[in-house]
Image (tube, rainbow over all chains, first blue to last red; front, side, top):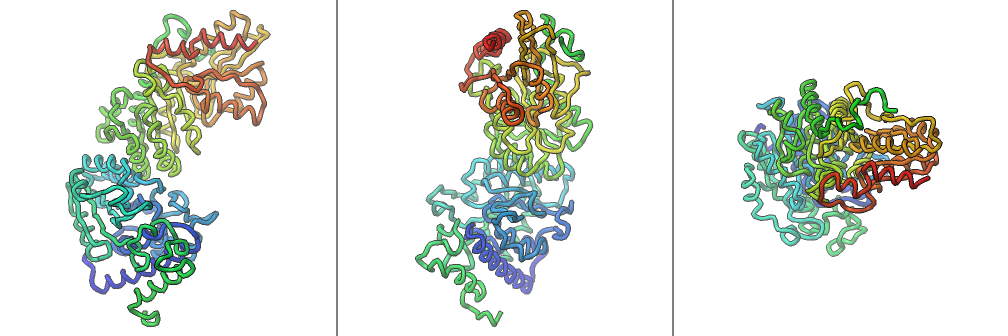
Length: 297
Length: 327
């Protein structure tokens, strides 16, 4: 995990913006799907697929690849968009999301699309699968540097299975497991603090024998450094609590739990009328929230 | 007439009695010797599921997950994704009973090469009572696309089923019992996934004939009932279905063509189990009345295994009585 130059950071930020635009286009074409988490995890997915991962989009089954397990399957638009931009499949295919016959199922299906490591959607089981991968890899290669990255939501941490998996990961000291939590503070029914308080989250994972870091999930340099540190911890599994702003990148959608499970065109109307939601979102992204005109970019 | 390959002590007081979970333990260890990809996981029931035989032989390939069946199912899926052949074992009530969604999504939908062992199935679990007596597991497993469902009749067949599951690429469920049950088959008995076996053939002299389809450890009870019914003038053929899915429909066609009535026998709810599977096939392809002998939409309860089998009509006498009432 090498340090990123300022120029590389700018490149990744630009790529994350393109991926966010793809996410909006996909959700609009599908007419359903999850907006907030898909937008707010774009920076981390971009960092993973364009900098961190050992992988080969032209050979998705390459044995030596790192594994990404998306436990929060509902934010698959950002996974699909990132994979397409990274070269796994044509970007044009993205707008088939959720449509009949598409490889881009509404929640990821492992056998449908090369490069998807696990089927997910029912929450809480991705961490267990990642633990299984990390265990199996370590059986074959105790000093492995093949990493298993598991992306979870924060609402998902309500599931008991998460803590069953965390207990086993801690027991087994899975140094090759890196969990990244999208701590966007929302879930379908409301803010996480109201639905089911999670704090002190750091202490919870620490007590399960994880190495815990908290980062600004939109600060690519900070996340990259945290991943580097997680890789260097040999005696414990790692968790990175990535504090994100839900629906990051489209300010009129941000920090509002009602954008968890609605696509542009079907979201809350108090800040933008439904018929303008898609257009406004794309305009916000193209102009970086009005800071630049599209012709500057 | 008994099939040639059966143990000669079948239906005699000298018959050997061994829990069929022993066969699982032996088969798993042998599978582990043959293929280093085989790994085992257990949820704090290593001794009673006989996973200890493997754990002692291959400690580095055994994972103790604690009392966490849902996690165990998905961890196994992750291990299979890395090329392992995981066997996960607990009591059937908890795995797959508690972990059904994880089995469906992370094992079956993922097409993971995971083998799920449900021990202590059926009312014959005995004194532990209804909470520990899985009599719904065949139903919930056979409904999952791509899942192979096996219920071996004795320890020898359980060992063969375990080895066959290890060689088969895809998810398999194996149902086991707690109690010592009669050893029916021998090393020479055939076992193939997808194949039924005639254990006892009716005598042609009988005018009234019944094809009795059975699965799991009740095979011995079916054989005892066949002997009793022969004395009452009813010719019974016992067709053992160690593989409930995929169903051996060729064997069912033959049975239907040569018998007046078809009956099924299982230590399971009559809703969704072997009887349902057999009925589903006949009703679509080869209309035939099917009389189901099993637990009739009730929970189990505490008691001695033999008492409970008698109470639910699964003893030779109850089976005989039920079949005689059909004529």
